Image 1 (cartoon, one colour):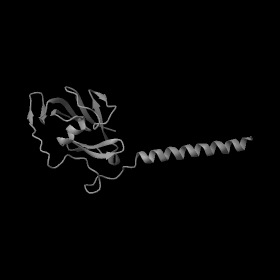
Image 2: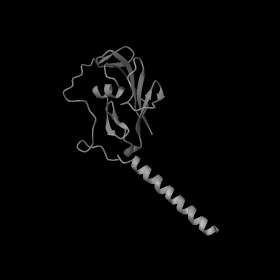
Image 3: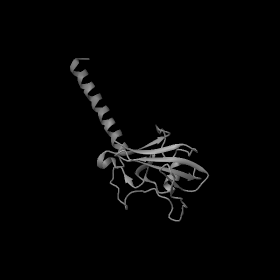
Image 4: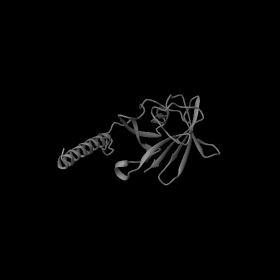
Length: 163
């Protein structure tokens, strides 16, 4: 095989790899619509569900929400590093269900689960400013989504705005 043919084959191979990588990247970013009330699939709690929440501020700055046998801590860290602490009481199985019920999170259902866009009324939109909500369990970056993470009594779950 001569040198010219080898260069052409290498160039063709590299172009094919780049096209495949671009296609994979584009399919991973397919949910890039701007958030509008009429066009997004919002994940919310049922309108008929009433949550009796005890909003009280204990001496340690936590807001207590919900009723249930299982108690966990929830921290929200905005883009400026300001922290808001909650004590969540729930009977829900997953952290996502508990936080959705209390309307602390909102997001879009996608191929990989719930994509959280709003936490405690604060929006992080990657399409606008390249920020997103990162989910943490006991201080560690979570290896599962909020909607698939089981509630563990005494654990601390957190959402932090990150770039």
